[in-house]
Image (cartoon, rainbow, N blue to C red; front, side, top):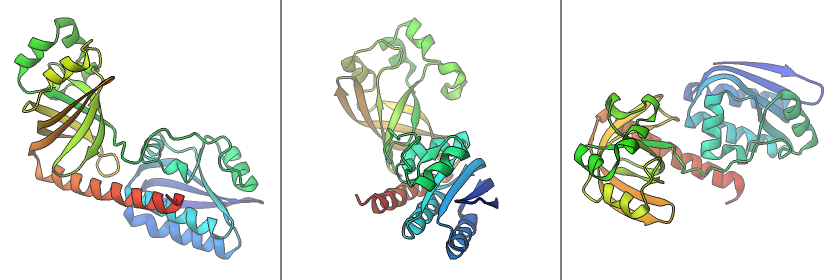
Length: 273
């Protein structure tokens, strides 16, 4: 990753380019320290050309924000790449370091010390970890509970597990090395929560695909057995234990859970929560 510093009359812009991972954390901190020493405490962090960012790098942004705030300054983010924006909003970092769509509005925000103006509010919590693609291994369950029309709708535009058959998508609620929890609103099946609970009954094995965007790119795959099912007014919440998962994926899951805990702790400190 490369960092270019653009000095303006009222603030500085740090233009980052490349992949922002653990190795480059020290570079960002060094640039922030140098700016503070020179009396510059209003900084815009441009992430337009950052293709990848991990949890340690996000933690360094929180640290930089706290460093500048301690000097009555401000840090904001401008024009993040789609990947960076998704991760920043997913973990809730934009509640601490606001996002702006262009450098002019970002610059005005740091100068006016009004970071909330123009920033996009986050509606996601730190533990909202994305989507889960799933499909019961026993195809007879699918045929029993879902009509042919519903099964066709569940092919998710080519994102099916194994490239064929029915699958659907839920919203992950938690993830660790033992398994995961996700919520499901039924998708296009037309099922009521009671029927969803029957389709995804305790003991049902699911093929799974899920993302670890802070640690790995693309989908991870596993097989899990449902151990909990809770009916809700808008769907069901499912808990399952991993029964088959690659060792490398399991290591990534452990690291991902550790990363998220680190970010939760840092955000809690930064917001006084």
